[in-house]
Structure formats: C-alpha cells, structure tokens
Amino acid sequence: MNKQQSFFKTILPLLSIIFFAGQFLLAQSHTDFIGAGHDNGVTVTTSHNQNASNNGQKTVDGFPITDLNVLSDASRFLAQASMGADWEMIQMTAAMGYEAWIDEQFTIQKTSMISQMYQAWDLFPYEPDPGEVLEENPPLWRYYFNAAWWNNVLSKPDALRQRIALALSEIFVISLYGSDLFEDVSNVGGNYLDLLSDHAFGNYRNLLGDVTRNPGMGIYLSHYNNPKIDLANNIFPDENYAREIMQLFSIGLKELNNDGSLKLDNFGNAIPTYTNLDINEYAKIFTGFGDGSPNGEFGAIENEDEIARLTTPMKMYENWHELGQKNLLNGLVVPAGQTGEQDVDMALDGLFAHDNVPPFISKKLIQFLVSSNPSPAYINRVSNVFIDNGQGVRGDFKAVVKAILLDSEARDCDAINHPTNGKLREPLLRLTSVAKAFNPYTSTNPFFAVGYDYTEVVNQTPLMSPSVFNFFSPFYQPAGDIQNNGLVGPEFQILNSSTSISYVNVADAMFFGDEYLATFEEGVPDPVLFDLTDEQSLLSANPNDATVLVERLNILMAAGQLSNNTKNIIINAVDQLTDADDKLDMAMYLIMISPDAVILK
Image (cartoon, rainbow, N blue to C red):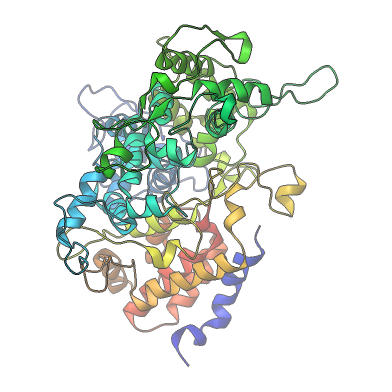
C-alpha cells in the first residue's frame, strides 16, 4: 500500500470538499522610513481581531515580518494583483505597503513576448524539412508563444502588468485556438499580448484604438480586408467587429447606471444599448482596413512577409472605405467627406464617451482581479475613478487599477468573511501562483516550459479561448446556492467533473512525481524545478509537528485562507508520515487541491 492509500481516510474529508463545495496602516514621525525600530510615537490600528496579541504595532516592527496575519494579508493582496509570489515578495510587499508596491510596479517595463519567443527559437529551433533552409527570424508556431509566456511569468518582475494584461486578454479577446494561420504564425499572439502589456497602465481610449487596428484582431473578428458596399455584387460590410466592440469591449448589451445596475424604462424593462441598425452603421466605419506592412495591399490574404502582415497595425485603404454620413449611438453623426481614419477615431471617441463604459469595464476588471460579485458601491467608486482620475483624465488604467486593488471591499478583513465576496481562482492562476511560490529554477536559467500537461486538461491556455466570449461568461451561474441567491461564478463554467479530477491528478503528478511543468520538448530545455530548501529546513527543525510548515505553505499557496479545520486535516495527515520529503509533498499536494486555496476571498 503506497503512502497515499495508507492515508486515504485522513485525507478523504479534504478531498470530498472539492466536489461538494460550490494595510495595515503605516504612520510615524520619522521622515526617512518606517520600521527597523523607527516606531516611537507610532500607533497602528488593524481591523484583524482574530488574535488580540497580533496588534497593528507589529506592522512596523521591522524586517523580516513575522506576523502571520500581516503576511496573509499581503499574500491575499498579491493573489489579486500578480501571477503569484514567493516568500520574499510577500515579505517585501508587506513591509513597503500596497500602494507603494503598486506605484513601484507602474515603473517596471514589460519584457517583450516577441523577443522571448525568438530567444526560445535561438535555443532550440525546430527541425527543417528536407532541403528547407531556415530563415533567420522565421514565423514561430504556438509552442514558442507558450514558452515565452511561461518564461515571462516565472522570471520577470512586472508582476502587476502581467496580471492586468492577462485580464485584458480575456476582455479584448483574440485566440490562437482553431486557426492554422495563428498557430503556425503565433507571432500574432506575441504581438497582441505585447500590445495589451503596453496599455495595461495606459488609457482605455488608446487601447481601444490600437486593438481596433491590430491585424490579429482584424483577422479574428473579420474587419481585416472589410470592403465597402458593392450592391452590384451583393457585398456589404462585415458586422462582426462592429457588434463585438460594443457588446464585449465597451458598452455591453444593456444600459447601466454608474454602479453597474441596469437602467429601466417606464415599464421596468432593461434598455438595449444598441440595435441592428446601429451595428450596420458601425460596420461602415470599420471598412477599408487592410495589410499595414510596407508592401501590403487591400484584399490580399497572403504576403511574402507574413510576419509583417500579421504584426504591423492595419492601415486604411480609402478606396475601400465606405463613404458618406454614418449615424451612430447617442445621436453622434459622422459627417460625409472625412477620411476613413477620421471616421474611425470619431466613432471610437463616441464609444469612449458613452456612460456605460466606466461601469462596464470597471466591473469586468474587478471580477478578474478581486470578486465575482462586487457590490454596486464598489463598482460605483471605481467607475468614478474611470470617469475622472482626479486630474480630469477619463479612462486612466493606472488610477482604475489602484482604485480596484486598494478599495475597502478588496482590502478590509471583514470582506473575507462576507458570503458574496471572492471568486474561484482561474485554473491558469492556480498553477502560476504555485509555481512562483517556490523560487522556480532551471540549470540554464530560461523557463521555456509550455505547461500543456496542465492547461489543456483544465481548459485554460493563454490566448486559447474557444471563442471571443472568453473561457467563461461573466454572467455564468452555477446551479445551487450561487444561482439561488442571484449571484454569478464565472470561472465555475470551466469547473466540471473532468477538469476537477484532472486538477487533482496534475497536483498529484507535481508533488508525488516531481512533474512541475511540461518542458518545451523532452529534455530540452531543463525541466522547471522548485527550490524547497526553506520548507525542508522547517521540517528538519520540527520533524514531528507540521504546524509551522503548514502555516508557511498556507501563506504561500492559499493566501493565508486555510480554515483551522483544513489545517488540522493536513497537519494530521503529514504528521503520520516519517520521510521528510513525503511530508512536504503531502502538505503541498493537499493545500493545492483544498477548496480554501482554490477560492480567493
């Protein structure tokens, strides 16, 4: 009988839950810094009252911080604001404060996906066909995109930018899924993710303009080579992008109040934001875009320089743009006689000014970062910041992101216990958070893993959504208490019997089989490994009591949110083992599959 079987009865209560469970403030008189003894005359209050001995004064007692409540709060913050964090990052964030951490993250530049894809290519180019001569910088297929994505996540410091870019990629969706062109020339995906990263701390209006002109989006939503009306040949403008830019990227389907609630007409019915006639008019706006590369031409579906065609912003071909007046939403009239680019900019300005944009985009970002069911008051506060960042600027993502992450509904300790607060962590974020927790490394430094052994069985691979509607709907209501109480649980849409069991199996392979992440190809490059030195030292110091180890792992893997009952189950299971490696594997495995870690409150 193996070690898992021998502890089946001990572990069963924890496993069964999976399938049946639906700043601290810093102030002092010194002008240089706080902490390290600089706390004379400082009074710090905290809303956390779980342990009276854990008073707020400990938040300035120095570095490293030992207060588990403070570290848990910092871990929870980073679970909302990053792709995952190790012990050192949690310590530093707790010490410097959340707003200071955000401000520092705003200054960190992105690492280009395209550059990382070609770094992976340089290390292990694919085998050429007989007689084929490989180009110096050839089109790269999807494995190189995944390799670059994982390398950035596991090794680059722009933690907040990466998290916002991921959220934006699930709002402004393009997908490499099901397209031979996009899979064979995944430069289009690297280019698009670079675009989102560039705008993560920019302005929504600028993002909307660049997304509209991006060739990947143009091909995905078919306004690339979108011609003007030709009645003789029964040709009319494609309406796909015109529909989705309104429904998914800006204003949604129904008119909203600033707090995200529905506006109602005199009969109590929700008010549609647009009609089919509006789609017709916007479709005319998005005609004339085509190949933006130097030698491009309208209508061509191939180019000698395929990479340039798929990564250079589309340009306007005036002869193919629908001329004449266009009548848009809210009485906006685009006059005849303008250039195509002027028409597009005027239409985008009109959407940007629409009253629905602040609550629509704000709520989506809150749902991705903090909570599936934010209160109307929370949405309203963030929407107001979207409308005006305090300096008269509309659509400032820096201000919006900061408002979301520092809002009382995101930060107050009481929010953890509120039944409607929190969210199911996306499968992708569950893996990145675990991988980043234990100082991952390879012997050659690059982290060119692809993660397919995990992402494909849990139905979430970066930029591989099955449709423009993302991996899951923001309106999805799983049956049971969530649906019965009128709430939503978007991520539950890809949680089912198959993905749940697959998730447990992957955790088993990670910790009992040391298969942390699939490598680019067998043996090349080195497998990604975890540095567990600190955890092993804790076990050596406490060989017969796993309490200290579980408390550390709780902060690293579960944002400090394991219940006492869950911790006791894990401690009892671990303490019955004798081998130190077995103890550590069992503890990490049980925490990774626990519902307390999977649900972020």
